[in-house]
Length: 475
Image (cartoon, rainbow, N blue to C red):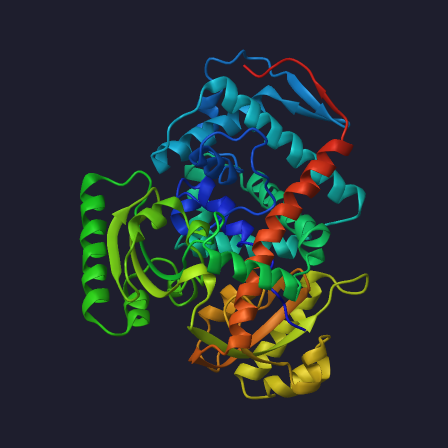
């Protein structure tokens, strides 16, 4: 089975970065499961809405000036949307807009957009509940671990950070569960149904040749080094982190091994996949990154520059026009897949896979033999061998973990929409794409287009089926 990529990114990391004021945009991440605002203002508002989903200590300040008694502003089917919910979300949107340097829209417009976003979210969560979609504790635990890693922390460090932000850990876990639920609902009801035909690809390529108005932007694979800066850092701490970022940039410019520089300097383990963020259209990167890279040639180094997360250094690893790279980094991997059902939970599957990893690492068994015996994927007959894969062929959560592995290394258990995986990277190479492989890369670009269109249509349909009663306007 090919775990084809059909979403933009890992939800858990993105929402957590928004909470911890290290902005999802600054990390190159986006929260899936969210619609564009029905009456969107400028791009910065839309980006900010996509990055604001978890409560933070700042929300307490958002209630200042609002009447003390909360009240219902709308009802979605039987579930209320409260004024405090709207105000808290507005405060986080405003924070993100400020961090991106965007222009703040009129408060009344922002309130309407936020209210509509909350209505659509509640309709999605109700759909998930009514159709039996559940997210168990193991998936939340894994998301929590990812959150900590993305912020350069261990679990204890994350808990300390949450307490400092005035966020209840139980509430934080439930918000992570909510975001995972939204992502899985989209994957189930939208992403898995998108089909791209050869005619779609031919039409897209014809548009590119004719230079049509909707010509795709350049696609790039950016290497990323993050030197994080604590939110309440002193001027001396900021200066020290900036000096380290400048050292990282200089090392990236003078040393040939970018991965070695990532390992030495980056506060994101392995630079979020060995420093590589993956080939994607330029407009799928954070606006901050897009502006910084500009017309930088392949191999160029940019930075350091500052965001709410800290200081960033970027390297343009690969670059192509219209999403058609000629040379890419390919991975040859094998995996073991355990599917989730009535007889096996995600936690059960992860426990079994952790034991398989222990046996492989200790030399008691080969990965290949375990895959043949236990994997519930079609690749089992080949010892779990997935063959050579170019960027974009696997779902993001699978590809992100795969990119972070070194040849011969085995991952920890990983949850995806297909079940729970154990992955082993066999080897990695730089490869020139054949015309057939280039078409496959274009297929991924076209799929992204169709996904967004189909997702918006699905959201409108879901919103149309919901009973929505507007009460008092937000204040």
